[in-house]
Length: 333
Ligand code: P6P
Image (cartoon, rainbow, N blue to C red; front, side, top):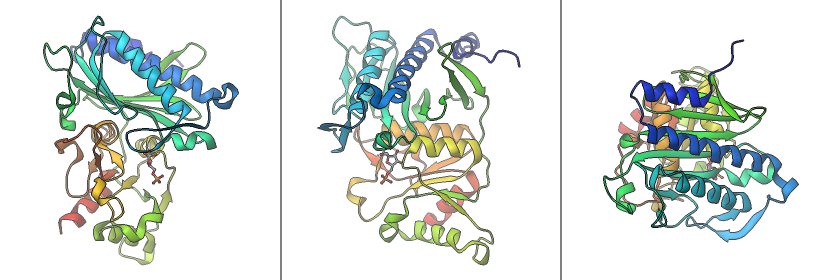
């Protein structure tokens, strides 16, 4: 088999085609470097005493794991020092991160969840990093929260890295979706999943069933019809998955189709949902749409939502187009 294309070659080609600029290529190389570090630490885990709680809480009020904080620090420091961003925003930091005065600014903003699904770390289940890239405001030394509050349609790029049996980086720059596997022998991400597309049909859904009694009618109807199987209105049996790690669920859906649902429910209605818009829902929605899928809150397209707050939450229903379209229709009947 001929040598797989390296991420660095892929990015150089994108730059030569004019699709991205040198600043973006530098940013992507920094993101790849940060995720290699995170992959190594996740992989070592308790060998270097990294599992367990950090005895602190993040802005979401969630207990932080040691690896949450380490991953966030590494991702933040590498991007801040790389000179390709003007500011950063992370699930693990309450406020926008402005660079020290003497540090070079670049043309992009990056929002990220440095270690999503980290509650799975201690039980050795796949976790991941999610990132979203926006253009920085022209000539602004210290972008503020307002500069980040752009709808997902304005994302320049989006991606995730899944730390599972393989470490795989999945990226879209607005022209399809490509996947790169980390070759630990060389330290390079190599193109192993070109032009990923989500099958339009599926018989597999992912939802936390323990919330069933709290769901709104359209979601209850959809899941009940799936559970009714071939004797029910869908005329076929369905399968269910729930990993409790969004990156793992989305990667499965990109690979073989499916629907991932974290819908609004009466328990979380006043919070707006469970998952965060700026660094979970928006990047994953750009990836899913670029791969031929669909991503909605229920009533609306996620990447059309105008953000009001940096850490705001939204309901998320994404995946195979035919099934998500059906759920969309149930919300609009
Ligand atoms: P629950 C992980 O904490 C996360 O943010 C997503 O990655 C995941 O899909 C979801 O929450 C799991 O939520 O309520 O099932 O623990």
